[in-house]
Amino acid sequence: MPLVSKAMETFPEKISVAVFLGGPNIDATTVYTEDLALATTLVRPVYLYPAEEIFKEIVLSSKRYGSVRRVFIVAAENNALTKEFIKLMIEKNPPDEVKEIQGSDHVTMMSKPRQLFTTFLSIANKYS
Image (cartoon, rainbow, N blue to C red; front, side, top):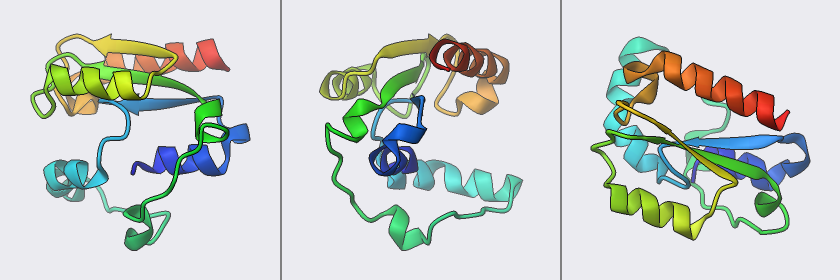
């Protein structure tokens, strides 16, 4: 369960909009398995929660988690997840908005950093 989902459930009144990059509720172990080796060579990891807390499943409620606006940013050239899988995730957990970054692979911050930044900026301006 992504930390953003946990934050949405715990503090919904403090979040204007939650942004999911790649799709909603991607299993954290998938992300860590693919990108942890690269990330640890680039930065020193700092965990806000103990590792066992990150992987502990929480229950998401429509009253709390569901009250937070959600935007999904989809990487157009994501080879880690099929388009069908991303579509299914969006159908199962409909967002307020879906944005797509053309030419981006599953590591959008590396493949299209400027487009990702402008997308974040437009979301922040719209939902603040």
